[in-house]
Length: 97
Image 1: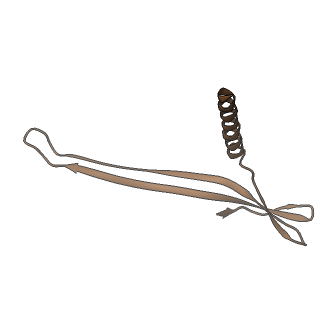
Image 2 (image 1 turned 60 degrees about the horizontal axis):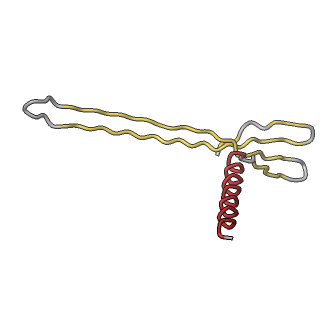
Image 3 (image 1 turned 120 degrees about the vertical axis):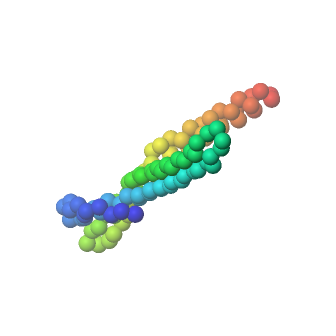
């Protein structure tokens, strides 16, 4: 988790929060020399880095409250799956009548 610089608004302070992920990997290979072909060797590496906003802490003199950021892609995916599932069930149920 990464916390941003606090932002002052009127009588409250907002503290942004993000999640950071990183993955790295690498490898190599070597093949023995045969009579007809020379030695072959290879190496490689790569990585992935992402930063996703999670929410904000809203800090007032009375309390501290965390407000998450809503992931609309996730909500739309769930809504689509439910809608397609209901449509399939209704079509299937209509077929048996």
